[in-house]
Image 1 (cartoon, one colour):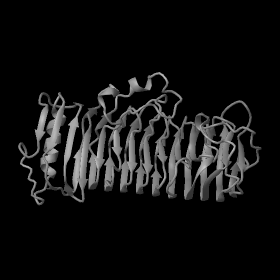
Image 2: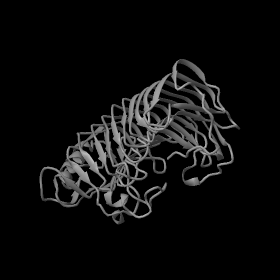
Image 3: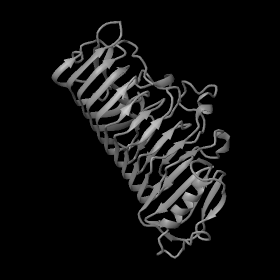
Image 4: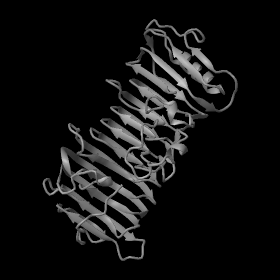
Length: 407
Protein backbone atom coordinates (compact mmCIF):
# COMPACT_ATOMS: atom_id res chain seq x y z
CA UNK A 1 0.00 0.00 0.00
CA UNK A 2 1.16 3.53 -0.67
CA UNK A 3 0.21 7.12 -0.10
CA UNK A 4 0.51 9.09 -3.32
CA UNK A 5 0.20 12.86 -3.76
CA UNK A 6 0.54 14.17 -7.31
CA UNK A 7 -0.02 17.88 -7.93
CA UNK A 8 1.01 20.08 -10.87
CA UNK A 9 1.25 23.89 -10.79
CA UNK A 10 -1.57 24.24 -8.26
CA UNK A 11 -3.80 21.99 -10.38
CA UNK A 12 -4.43 18.42 -9.39
CA UNK A 13 -4.73 16.00 -12.31
CA UNK A 14 -5.15 12.65 -10.56
CA UNK A 15 -4.35 11.38 -7.11
CA UNK A 16 -4.87 7.99 -5.54
CA UNK A 17 -4.06 7.60 -1.86
CA UNK A 18 -4.06 4.41 0.16
CA UNK A 19 -3.39 4.51 3.87
CA UNK A 20 -2.21 1.25 5.33
CA UNK A 21 -3.01 1.73 9.01
CA UNK A 22 -3.04 4.54 11.52
CA UNK A 23 -2.65 4.81 15.24
CA UNK A 24 -4.48 7.82 16.63
CA UNK A 25 -7.79 8.99 17.95
CA UNK A 26 -11.03 7.75 16.52
CA UNK A 27 -12.09 4.34 15.34
CA UNK A 28 -14.06 2.35 12.83
CA UNK A 29 -14.44 3.67 9.30
CA UNK A 30 -12.21 2.49 6.51
CA UNK A 31 -12.99 1.71 2.89
CA UNK A 32 -13.10 4.16 -0.01
CA UNK A 33 -13.32 7.89 0.71
CA UNK A 34 -14.33 9.79 -2.43
CA UNK A 35 -13.54 13.51 -2.16
CA UNK A 36 -16.21 14.36 -4.76
CA UNK A 37 -19.07 12.20 -3.48
CA UNK A 38 -18.46 12.76 0.23
CA UNK A 39 -16.83 16.17 0.55
CA UNK A 40 -18.10 18.07 -2.48
CA UNK A 41 -14.86 18.50 -4.44
CA UNK A 42 -15.39 19.79 -8.00
CA UNK A 43 -13.29 19.11 -11.09
CA UNK A 44 -14.01 22.53 -12.57
CA UNK A 45 -10.47 23.99 -12.41
CA UNK A 46 -11.62 26.82 -10.08
CA UNK A 47 -13.08 25.33 -6.87
CA UNK A 48 -10.32 24.87 -4.31
CA UNK A 49 -9.67 21.22 -3.47
CA UNK A 50 -7.80 22.00 -0.21
CA UNK A 51 -10.63 21.51 2.29
CA UNK A 52 -12.16 18.36 0.72
CA UNK A 53 -8.72 16.77 0.51
CA UNK A 54 -7.83 17.55 4.11
CA UNK A 55 -11.27 16.41 5.34
CA UNK A 56 -10.74 13.11 3.55
CA UNK A 57 -7.27 12.74 5.07
CA UNK A 58 -8.65 13.37 8.58
CA UNK A 59 -11.35 10.74 8.13
CA UNK A 60 -8.84 8.20 6.85
CA UNK A 61 -6.49 8.89 9.76
CA UNK A 62 -9.33 8.42 12.26
CA UNK A 63 -10.04 4.97 10.84
CA UNK A 64 -8.69 1.81 12.48
CA UNK A 65 -9.00 -0.16 9.23
CA UNK A 66 -7.34 0.39 5.84
CA UNK A 67 -8.70 3.37 3.93
CA UNK A 68 -8.33 4.62 0.38
CA UNK A 69 -8.78 8.29 -0.53
CA UNK A 70 -9.93 8.62 -4.13
CA UNK A 71 -9.92 11.78 -6.23
CA UNK A 72 -11.79 10.86 -9.41
CA UNK A 73 -10.43 11.68 -12.84
CA UNK A 74 -10.54 15.33 -13.77
CA UNK A 75 -8.67 18.61 -13.33
CA UNK A 76 -8.90 20.22 -9.90
CA UNK A 77 -7.63 23.55 -8.60
CA UNK A 78 -5.45 23.34 -5.47
CA UNK A 79 -4.24 26.46 -3.67
CA UNK A 80 -1.51 26.46 -1.00
CA UNK A 81 -2.01 23.32 1.01
CA UNK A 82 -0.98 22.07 4.44
CA UNK A 83 -1.08 18.46 5.58
CA UNK A 84 -1.32 18.28 9.38
CA UNK A 85 -0.27 14.87 10.74
CA UNK A 86 -0.67 14.52 14.51
CA UNK A 87 -1.00 10.76 14.95
CA UNK A 88 1.22 7.83 13.98
CA UNK A 89 0.91 6.38 10.49
CA UNK A 90 2.27 2.84 10.18
CA UNK A 91 3.45 1.00 7.12
CA UNK A 92 2.76 -2.75 6.81
CA UNK A 93 5.61 -4.62 8.48
CA UNK A 94 5.85 -7.16 5.65
CA UNK A 95 7.97 -5.81 2.74
CA UNK A 96 6.06 -8.16 0.46
CA UNK A 97 3.05 -5.83 0.69
CA UNK A 98 4.76 -3.39 -1.69
CA UNK A 99 4.93 -3.55 -5.46
CA UNK A 100 7.29 -0.53 -5.56
CA UNK A 101 10.08 0.43 -3.14
CA UNK A 102 8.30 3.45 -1.67
CA UNK A 103 5.51 4.13 0.75
CA UNK A 104 4.64 7.84 0.82
CA UNK A 105 5.18 9.97 -2.25
CA UNK A 106 4.68 13.73 -2.65
CA UNK A 107 5.10 14.66 -6.30
CA UNK A 108 4.84 17.85 -8.35
CA UNK A 109 3.55 20.06 -5.54
CA UNK A 110 3.97 23.81 -5.18
CA UNK A 111 3.51 25.73 -1.90
CA UNK A 112 3.03 22.73 0.38
CA UNK A 113 3.49 22.23 4.12
CA UNK A 114 3.65 18.96 6.04
CA UNK A 115 3.53 19.44 9.82
CA UNK A 116 1.66 18.54 13.00
CA UNK A 117 4.09 16.61 15.21
CA UNK A 118 3.04 13.22 13.80
CA UNK A 119 5.05 10.07 13.14
CA UNK A 120 5.54 7.96 10.02
CA UNK A 121 6.53 4.49 11.24
CA UNK A 122 8.22 2.24 8.66
CA UNK A 123 8.25 -0.82 10.94
CA UNK A 124 11.61 -1.85 9.51
CA UNK A 125 12.75 -4.19 12.26
CA UNK A 126 11.94 -7.27 10.20
CA UNK A 127 13.84 -5.94 7.21
CA UNK A 128 16.92 -5.10 9.30
CA UNK A 129 17.15 -8.71 10.44
CA UNK A 130 16.95 -10.23 6.97
CA UNK A 131 19.86 -12.53 6.29
CA UNK A 132 22.52 -10.89 4.16
CA UNK A 133 21.42 -7.27 4.76
CA UNK A 134 24.07 -6.29 7.28
CA UNK A 135 27.18 -4.96 5.57
CA UNK A 136 25.73 -4.73 2.08
CA UNK A 137 25.08 -1.59 0.05
CA UNK A 138 21.65 -2.67 -1.21
CA UNK A 139 19.12 -4.75 0.62
CA UNK A 140 16.36 -5.42 -1.86
CA UNK A 141 13.44 -3.18 -2.82
CA UNK A 142 12.16 -2.01 0.54
CA UNK A 143 9.84 0.98 1.02
CA UNK A 144 10.97 4.46 1.98
CA UNK A 145 9.03 6.16 4.75
CA UNK A 146 8.90 9.72 3.39
CA UNK A 147 9.84 9.95 -0.26
CA UNK A 148 10.07 13.47 -1.74
CA UNK A 149 11.14 12.72 -5.27
CA UNK A 150 10.89 13.31 -8.98
CA UNK A 151 9.00 10.86 -11.13
CA UNK A 152 9.29 11.64 -14.80
CA UNK A 153 9.14 15.48 -14.74
CA UNK A 154 7.56 15.92 -11.34
CA UNK A 155 9.03 18.09 -8.53
CA UNK A 156 8.38 19.94 -5.26
CA UNK A 157 8.73 23.72 -5.07
CA UNK A 158 8.42 25.94 -1.98
CA UNK A 159 7.72 23.25 0.62
CA UNK A 160 8.12 23.03 4.40
CA UNK A 161 8.41 19.77 6.36
CA UNK A 162 8.13 20.74 10.02
CA UNK A 163 7.75 18.89 13.34
CA UNK A 164 7.51 15.48 11.68
CA UNK A 165 9.16 12.21 12.77
CA UNK A 166 10.08 9.27 10.60
CA UNK A 167 11.21 6.06 12.26
CA UNK A 168 12.45 2.63 11.30
CA UNK A 169 12.20 3.02 7.55
CA UNK A 170 13.12 -0.07 5.58
CA UNK A 171 15.44 2.10 3.45
CA UNK A 172 16.00 5.86 3.15
CA UNK A 173 13.93 7.84 5.61
CA UNK A 174 13.43 10.87 3.36
CA UNK A 175 14.55 11.16 -0.26
CA UNK A 176 14.53 14.66 -1.77
CA UNK A 177 14.99 14.63 -5.55
CA UNK A 178 14.67 17.51 -8.02
CA UNK A 179 13.12 19.90 -5.51
CA UNK A 180 13.48 23.66 -5.21
CA UNK A 181 13.23 25.70 -2.01
CA UNK A 182 12.30 22.98 0.46
CA UNK A 183 12.95 23.23 4.21
CA UNK A 184 13.10 20.50 6.85
CA UNK A 185 12.80 22.01 10.33
CA UNK A 186 12.52 20.18 13.63
CA UNK A 187 12.55 16.98 11.60
CA UNK A 188 13.31 13.83 13.60
CA UNK A 189 14.66 10.55 12.29
CA UNK A 190 14.87 7.48 14.49
CA UNK A 191 16.35 4.14 13.41
CA UNK A 192 18.83 1.80 15.10
CA UNK A 193 22.55 1.77 14.35
CA UNK A 194 22.27 -1.67 12.74
CA UNK A 195 19.64 -0.60 10.17
CA UNK A 196 21.26 -0.83 6.69
CA UNK A 197 20.96 1.83 3.98
CA UNK A 198 18.64 3.99 6.07
CA UNK A 199 19.99 7.46 5.24
CA UNK A 200 18.14 10.05 7.29
CA UNK A 201 17.69 12.61 4.50
CA UNK A 202 19.08 12.01 1.01
CA UNK A 203 19.30 15.02 -1.29
CA UNK A 204 19.85 14.94 -5.03
CA UNK A 205 19.48 17.30 -8.01
CA UNK A 206 17.81 19.87 -5.78
CA UNK A 207 18.32 23.62 -5.38
CA UNK A 208 17.80 25.51 -2.14
CA UNK A 209 17.28 22.76 0.45
CA UNK A 210 17.50 23.69 4.14
CA UNK A 211 17.79 21.15 6.96
CA UNK A 212 17.45 23.06 10.21
CA UNK A 213 17.45 22.20 13.92
CA UNK A 214 16.79 18.51 13.39
CA UNK A 215 17.76 15.29 15.18
CA UNK A 216 18.81 12.25 13.16
CA UNK A 217 19.64 8.80 14.53
CA UNK A 218 20.07 6.09 11.92
CA UNK A 219 22.23 3.28 10.52
CA UNK A 220 23.67 5.19 7.55
CA UNK A 221 24.39 8.82 6.63
CA UNK A 222 22.39 11.26 8.72
CA UNK A 223 22.32 13.51 5.66
CA UNK A 224 23.64 12.35 2.28
CA UNK A 225 24.08 14.75 -0.62
CA UNK A 226 24.03 13.35 -4.13
CA UNK A 227 24.81 14.75 -7.55
CA UNK A 228 23.14 17.91 -8.84
CA UNK A 229 22.68 19.37 -5.35
CA UNK A 230 23.28 23.11 -5.02
CA UNK A 231 22.70 25.94 -2.58
CA UNK A 232 22.12 23.73 0.44
CA UNK A 233 22.21 24.72 4.13
CA UNK A 234 22.42 22.17 6.93
CA UNK A 235 22.32 24.01 10.26
CA UNK A 236 21.75 22.80 13.79
CA UNK A 237 21.57 19.07 13.06
CA UNK A 238 22.32 16.54 15.79
CA UNK A 239 23.58 13.28 14.28
CA UNK A 240 24.26 9.95 15.94
CA UNK A 241 24.31 7.06 15.65
CA UNK A 242 24.97 7.09 11.92
CA UNK A 243 27.63 7.71 9.30
CA UNK A 244 27.74 11.49 9.71
CA UNK A 245 26.96 14.15 7.10
CA UNK A 246 28.27 13.06 3.70
CA UNK A 247 28.61 14.72 0.33
CA UNK A 248 28.69 12.00 -2.27
CA UNK A 249 29.51 9.52 -3.25
CA UNK A 250 30.14 10.89 -6.73
CA UNK A 251 31.95 9.49 -9.76
CA UNK A 252 30.32 6.09 -10.04
CA UNK A 253 27.71 6.79 -12.73
CA UNK A 254 27.73 8.57 -16.07
CA UNK A 255 26.33 12.09 -16.46
CA UNK A 256 26.35 13.01 -12.79
CA UNK A 257 25.69 16.71 -12.24
CA UNK A 258 28.02 19.04 -10.26
CA UNK A 259 27.55 19.68 -6.55
CA UNK A 260 28.19 23.23 -5.35
CA UNK A 261 27.21 25.73 -2.70
CA UNK A 262 26.86 23.50 0.39
CA UNK A 263 27.13 24.88 3.94
CA UNK A 264 27.10 22.61 7.00
CA UNK A 265 27.32 24.49 10.31
CA UNK A 266 26.44 24.31 14.01
CA UNK A 267 26.08 20.53 13.88
CA UNK A 268 26.91 17.87 16.49
CA UNK A 269 28.08 14.32 15.74
CA UNK A 270 28.10 11.72 18.52
CA UNK A 271 29.31 8.10 18.21
CA UNK A 272 29.19 8.23 14.41
CA UNK A 273 31.52 6.47 11.97
CA UNK A 274 32.21 9.78 10.19
CA UNK A 275 31.80 13.43 11.02
CA UNK A 276 31.80 15.66 7.93
CA UNK A 277 32.79 13.84 4.78
CA UNK A 278 33.24 14.15 1.02
CA UNK A 279 33.53 10.86 -0.88
CA UNK A 280 34.18 9.98 -4.51
CA UNK A 281 34.87 6.72 -6.31
CA UNK A 282 38.27 5.95 -7.81
CA UNK A 283 38.35 5.44 -11.57
CA UNK A 284 34.87 5.46 -13.07
CA UNK A 285 33.29 8.80 -14.13
CA UNK A 286 34.17 12.53 -13.93
CA UNK A 287 32.39 15.12 -11.79
CA UNK A 288 32.90 18.26 -9.68
CA UNK A 289 32.39 19.42 -6.09
CA UNK A 290 32.94 23.11 -5.32
CA UNK A 291 32.19 25.72 -2.66
CA UNK A 292 31.66 23.26 0.19
CA UNK A 293 31.95 24.64 3.73
CA UNK A 294 31.88 22.91 7.12
CA UNK A 295 32.06 25.09 10.23
CA UNK A 296 31.29 25.11 13.95
CA UNK A 297 31.07 21.32 14.22
CA UNK A 298 31.30 19.35 17.49
CA UNK A 299 32.39 15.69 17.31
CA UNK A 300 32.28 13.21 20.20
CA UNK A 301 33.85 9.77 19.82
CA UNK A 302 33.61 9.96 16.02
CA UNK A 303 35.74 7.45 14.08
CA UNK A 304 36.67 9.83 11.21
CA UNK A 305 35.75 13.41 12.17
CA UNK A 306 37.09 15.19 9.04
CA UNK A 307 37.46 13.22 5.85
CA UNK A 308 37.83 13.71 2.12
CA UNK A 309 37.98 10.23 0.64
CA UNK A 310 38.65 10.05 -3.09
CA UNK A 311 39.40 6.35 -2.72
CA UNK A 312 35.90 5.54 -1.50
CA UNK A 313 35.48 1.83 -2.12
CA UNK A 314 32.94 0.06 0.11
CA UNK A 315 32.91 -3.72 -0.13
CA UNK A 316 35.87 -3.52 -2.57
CA UNK A 317 33.52 -2.76 -5.48
CA UNK A 318 35.74 -0.30 -7.33
CA UNK A 319 38.94 0.21 -9.31
CA UNK A 320 40.99 0.93 -6.21
CA UNK A 321 44.29 1.29 -8.10
CA UNK A 322 42.92 4.08 -10.30
CA UNK A 323 42.52 7.75 -9.40
CA UNK A 324 39.20 9.54 -8.99
CA UNK A 325 38.12 11.73 -11.90
CA UNK A 326 36.06 14.00 -9.67
CA UNK A 327 37.47 17.50 -9.21
CA UNK A 328 37.22 19.08 -5.73
CA UNK A 329 37.77 22.81 -5.11
CA UNK A 330 36.99 25.60 -2.64
CA UNK A 331 36.41 23.48 0.44
CA UNK A 332 36.76 24.66 4.04
CA UNK A 333 36.75 23.04 7.48
CA UNK A 334 36.52 25.69 10.23
CA UNK A 335 36.17 25.46 14.02
CA UNK A 336 35.76 21.71 14.28
CA UNK A 337 36.45 20.34 17.73
CA UNK A 338 35.92 17.32 19.97
CA UNK A 339 37.17 13.73 20.15
CA UNK A 340 38.05 11.06 17.62
CA UNK A 341 37.54 7.32 18.23
CA UNK A 342 40.50 6.57 15.92
CA UNK A 343 43.89 8.25 15.73
CA UNK A 344 43.16 9.50 12.16
CA UNK A 345 41.16 12.57 13.14
CA UNK A 346 41.78 14.40 9.85
CA UNK A 347 42.13 12.52 6.58
CA UNK A 348 42.21 14.38 3.26
CA UNK A 349 42.88 11.88 0.48
CA UNK A 350 42.59 13.61 -2.89
CA UNK A 351 43.01 12.41 -6.45
CA UNK A 352 46.48 12.39 -7.99
CA UNK A 353 44.89 13.06 -11.38
CA UNK A 354 42.85 16.02 -10.11
CA UNK A 355 44.41 17.23 -6.85
CA UNK A 356 42.12 19.16 -4.50
CA UNK A 357 42.32 22.93 -4.89
CA UNK A 358 41.79 25.70 -2.35
CA UNK A 359 41.19 23.53 0.72
CA UNK A 360 41.24 25.36 4.06
CA UNK A 361 41.75 24.02 7.60
CA UNK A 362 41.06 26.61 10.32
CA UNK A 363 40.85 26.18 14.09
CA UNK A 364 40.83 22.39 14.32
CA UNK A 365 40.95 20.93 17.85
CA UNK A 366 40.35 17.17 17.90
CA UNK A 367 41.90 14.75 20.38
CA UNK A 368 42.02 10.96 20.20
CA UNK A 369 39.82 9.38 22.87
CA UNK A 370 41.43 5.91 22.55
CA UNK A 371 44.55 4.35 24.08
CA UNK A 372 46.66 3.99 20.89
CA UNK A 373 48.34 7.36 20.68
CA UNK A 374 47.51 10.98 19.81
CA UNK A 375 45.30 12.16 16.98
CA UNK A 376 46.95 12.55 13.58
CA UNK A 377 46.24 14.38 10.32
CA UNK A 378 46.86 12.72 6.95
CA UNK A 379 46.90 14.41 3.54
CA UNK A 380 47.48 13.29 -0.03
CA UNK A 381 47.47 15.34 -3.24
CA UNK A 382 46.44 18.53 -1.48
CA UNK A 383 48.17 21.60 -0.05
CA UNK A 384 45.64 23.08 2.35
CA UNK A 385 45.64 26.64 3.61
CA UNK A 386 46.10 26.42 7.38
CA UNK A 387 45.14 29.00 10.02
CA UNK A 388 44.39 29.13 13.72
CA UNK A 389 45.00 26.26 16.11
CA UNK A 390 45.76 22.89 14.54
CA UNK A 391 45.48 19.84 16.75
CA UNK A 392 46.50 17.49 15.26
CA UNK A 393 49.14 19.34 13.24
CA UNK A 394 47.85 19.61 9.67
CA UNK A 395 49.04 16.93 7.23
CA UNK A 396 51.74 15.70 9.60
CA UNK A 397 51.20 11.93 9.40
CA UNK A 398 52.07 9.51 6.57
CA UNK A 399 49.38 7.81 4.52
CA UNK A 400 49.22 4.01 4.98
CA UNK A 401 49.71 1.84 1.89
CA UNK A 402 46.14 0.55 2.20
CA UNK A 403 43.85 3.23 3.67
CA UNK A 404 41.11 2.03 5.99
CA UNK A 405 37.85 1.81 3.98
CA UNK A 406 34.91 3.88 5.16
CA UNK A 407 31.25 2.94 5.19
